[in-house]
Image (cartoon, rainbow, N blue to C red; front, side, top):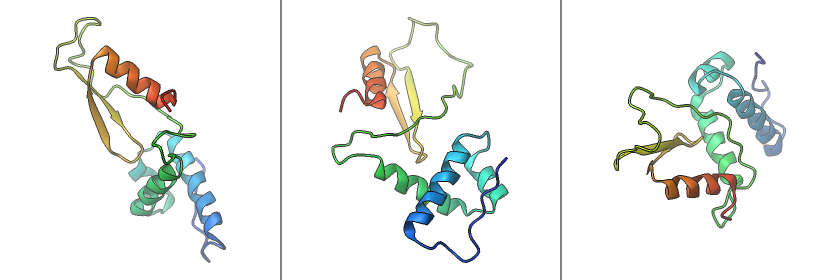
Length: 126
């Protein structure tokens, strides 16, 4: 695993700092460690990591709210014990999306909502 160390003398510029955090965040997303574990192993402050994730994500969102270049790294089914049989969802069934910021969207599991959400994530509704 690559180790990410903050420069001992600080960053020469804001753009250098930004490039460093882009590499760090990409490295964490590409691995199997949680944010907490990753930051602990690399001697990074979790609060700084989260602040840069938020900052860099904001820069990727256009003024009209459409995504530009956001990458989605991993999809996990967090609970499988009560998954309904396909085609027999209860009217209260929901799906959840966790954003890189840690915010969670919980939406009704309705075909039209699911398809619209997928299109938005793919950038097709911009």
